[in-house]
Amino acid sequence: MLKVDEKNCDQCGSCISICPSDSLILTDVLKINNQTCLRCGKCVKICPFGALTMEK
Ligand code: SF4
Ligand code: SF4
Image 1 (cartoon, rainbow, N blue to C red):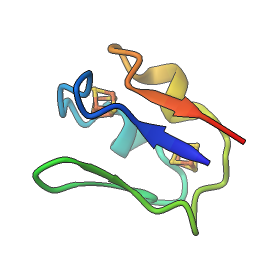
Image 2: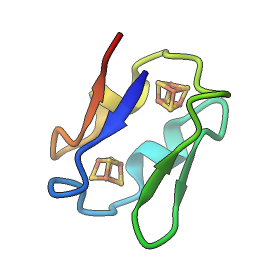
Image 3: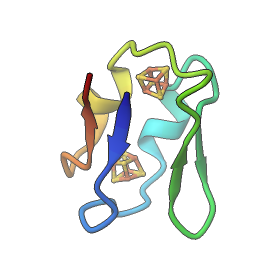
């Protein structure tokens, strides 16, 4: 499953715009919907702060 390290997230929004399944939502922190996430890894690659990681 996808996880966000809230300490490193700058809330830049890059991951949200690239997500093909609208699984990322920015409220006060970045929220992940792991039910709809396709595990494509696009958000992990695009994050400039390395805040997203894919775990088993
Ligand atoms: S892994 Fe892919 S589908 Fe899942 S949140 Fe990231 S960009 Fe969206
Ligand atoms: S791309 Fe990275 S820093 Fe930007 S909102 Fe997403 S997780 Fe946060």
